[in-house]
Length: 254
Image (tube, rainbow, N blue to C red; front, side, top):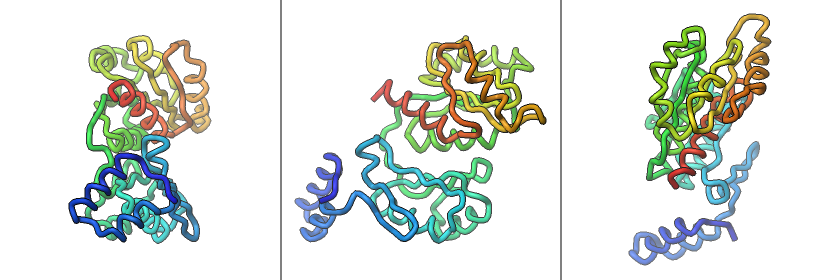
């Protein structure tokens, strides 16, 4: 017997009672396995019940054929697909296969299907230090939106021009959480943390010259932040930063 949340069981029961769903289909739905097993993947269909959100697909290294099989398993379960790290070649194939889907080439995100979130809760401010940080920021923005949280994007307010940050502080202070995406020396999250009462999720990027060591300098700078409300995710991990911030925002209003 599969595992299903109470809301889905209630929906199925209503469809059965109204005659929209035959008894045999109702029984199959209740008995469905919490895992959709295929040759190269096992899709967790129970994650939404356990963790609050469905499984997200990591697209890097997967063929378009494999991705389409994974997508179909999620779509059949009523989930809006969020797939990260989709390169341009796979993006073109998936866009043709799913005309109703949406490919964000900059953030390398592909989304398709009806949203699993019917109610939008909370708000996140998404900040970039510079234009070069946009690909990582777009991955975070798409994730936050997929999770049903409003996102206010504030671009290009790095510490080299401190007046730019001061002009936007009021917007940051109204957010439930702030995601700061920055490369180079990674100083911006600490500065933002000193202006807001909410959690700040710092996302170091691999942007920078040689001594930035592909984002390691920004990562270490953020990990050593003296701002107590700053937490750090991995280099270029826009999805992880966006996911955590959206969880915080929804938790404050849910």
